[in-house]
Length: 123
Image (tube, rainbow, N blue to C red; front, side, top):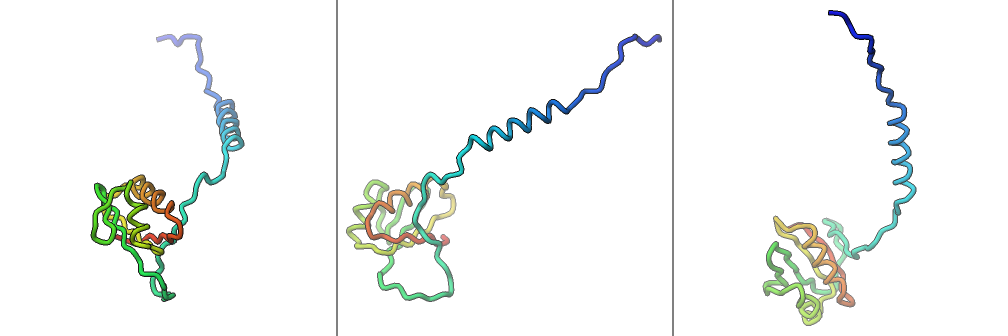
C-alpha cells in the first residue's frame, strides 16, 4: 500500500500551557482572600482546667431537632430559650449525621444572643 503524502505533525502544547497559565494568573489576581464572616466559638480543650463561673447550658444539635439541656426547641425559638436560661456558656454538641450547614445555622442564631460564649464539643 502506498503511503499518502500527508504527514501528521506533532501537536504543540506550548500555546495550551500559556493559556492555562494566563487563566490561573487571572483567577488568582481577581479573587479576594478575605473572610466573609466569622463564628465566635472556641473548641473545648481537655485537661487544662480553668474554672468556669457560669453554669454551662448543653445544646445538642440533631439532624431534625435541637435539644437545649433536655427540652426540644426550634431554631426560631433558640435565642429566646437561651435568654430565658440566662446562659453565659453554651456547649454545642452536634450528633452524628448533622450537616455542616445545619450546625452553622444553629451557631449563627446562637451568637445573636448577647453575652453568650459558644463552645463546640464532640458529640
